[in-house]
Amino acid sequence: MLPLKEKDKPIIQKLLSSGCCARCILRFCCVSVQAAYRQLQQNTLKELKAFISDSGNSKAPNSAAPESTEENNKSHDAAVPDPPEDPPSKRAKLEPSGSDAPSEEDAAVRLKDEEPRVCVVCLGILQDLCDSSQAVKLAQAVKAEKYEFDTLVLSVSLPAQLCVREHSCWLHVKKEVREKGLVLDKDDVVQVKEAFKWIMQGQVAKELGGVAVFSKSMFEVGVEFTHPDTDADCHFLASVCPDCFKPTKNKQSVFTRMAVVKALEKISDAKFLKHYPCPPTQPTSSCCPPGVQCLHVSVFVAGRYNKFCRSLPQTPWVIDGERRMESSVEELIAAPVLSAFRADGFNFSSSGREDVDVRTLGNGRPFAMELLNPHKSRLNRVEMKQLQETINKSSDKIRVRDLQIVTREAMSRMKEGEEEKTKSYTALVWTQKPIQREDITFIDDIKDLTLDQKTPLRVLHRRALAVRQRVIHSMNARFVDSHHFYLGLKTQAGTYIKEFVHGDFGRTKPNLCQLLNTDTDILELDVESVDVDWPPAIPE
Ligand SMILES: *[C@@H]1O[C@H](CO)[C@@H](O)[C@H](O)[C@H]1NC(C)=O
Ligand SMILES: *[C@@H]1O[C@H](CO)[C@@H](O)[C@H](O)[C@H]1NC(C)=O
Ligand SMILES: CC(=O)N[C@H]1CO[C@H](CO)[C@@H](O)[C@@H]1O
Ligand SMILES: [Zn+2]
Image 1 (spheres, helix red, strand yellow):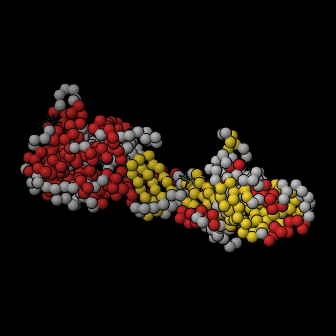
Image 2 (cartoon, protein in one colour; image 1 turned 90 degrees about the horizontal axis):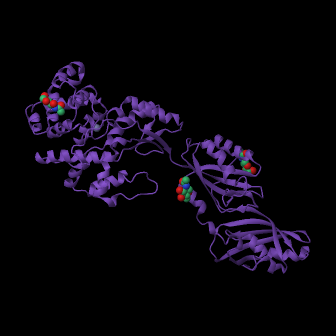
Image 3 (cartoon, protein in one colour; image 1 turned 90 degrees about the vertical axis):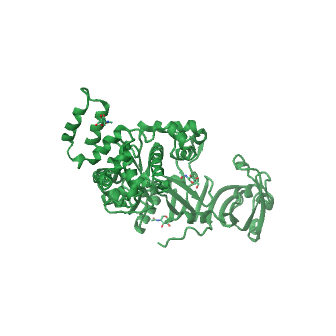
């Protein structure tokens, strides 16, 4: 039994004759019992008709009397017991009533009885587009994408004109309700989206092997309906509310659902009724079979990388549209990670970066990746280790460790306080004047040397000119030969090491040339450690 009340009768009567489907009628009667929507629509229709013809058998048709002839025919239908059961005899009855050539009206009447007409409000979405065969199709579309998930959320996108039709129907009902001295709050009308979900979610989940359906999930199945035939329904709104429809770059049409809703909020009832039929006109076809789009929220993966190559940029290096190096740290790491998580794309970030000719040794540099739309979102320890091994083996230019899944929030820890972190380097230094072992020992005693660094010439094209202060916490020198030594440095993050060594034409002060009283240059640079304690180390 449908949970209907006496006051619903005029509404049901009115909507039945307007070409609303049974489920849309339930919506406008504010029925919020989900099971009512799940029962077969033919049965609901039968119940609705029985309900209005019941008891007040004179009342319902009477109230419909001033309506169109079509409405009379429909209320007449309603009084006939079990109308849809026997179409042939029904047609036989109807045919003689037409003229020699079957008129359009006759065709409409026939159509309405043989196959239910397309609902004027939901455009078929709550009719044939949400039965069990549709659930199977939807589930198949999801299965074909091969995602791994144990919960899902269904999201429904409806054609914008559905709002216009809903509004028209609402005005239609409102008039009736007012006349009867009843109240009906528009917010209490159940939305098409909701009803669709109530009907479909459970069925789809069952088809997918019993996954749980939640109002929130990492995995979203988007169902998008379109109905090109009635797209023009929205157009009159543009003249009524030009401000509501501003062209945007990414949208194909200005008639977005949001814009239409906004326009409908602004427009007066009188104006709406002047421009748009109430109730809406009969559509000739249902919505197109929906497009299904699956989306899994991003997964974040972090780790540390070593770079052993002096000709590998961190990110793809493109100058004037032309690629300069065949690979990059980012790509070498991303390719195996993307395929392990079967993700559509990624976003790479790291705790600082090294120049193309600088190696990163020691425990490596922390990095994190956002994986977009991953089809697989979990890797166990063994799989994670395998992934790490795949990356390690894919090239001798890089290695990764501590690879792990992290949260989006945790990722920000890599960036925060970056300036305060310390980094250790080893530089191979060349001196113009010959040096002896003793000449460089004083370097070991220098502590907390503050540098003023003007933005280096080599980065001036992409950074603003400024003077930054950075601290070299400690240094040590290891003699190689009369023109070379290794300089170890422990510095504040963000120190320009190359500029400290060669002086950058005096733009970094003090610099190593001044300290040693000779021209010096840097031949090689290695990052020995990046002292960021994130991500946590993973024990082997
Ligand atoms: C990558 O990250 C940046 C910054 O967090 C963000 O603005 C951008 O939208 C992301 N890209 C993608 C494709 O998600
Ligand atoms: C990958 O290489 C890093 C750095 O050498 C090492 O720490 C890690 O254990 C390696 N992982 C695997 C699974 O090979
Ligand atoms: C729209 C429609 O079908 N109207 C019909 C309603 O019934 C009367 C009489 O039964 C017909 O004359 C109309 O054509
Ligand atoms: Zn409907």
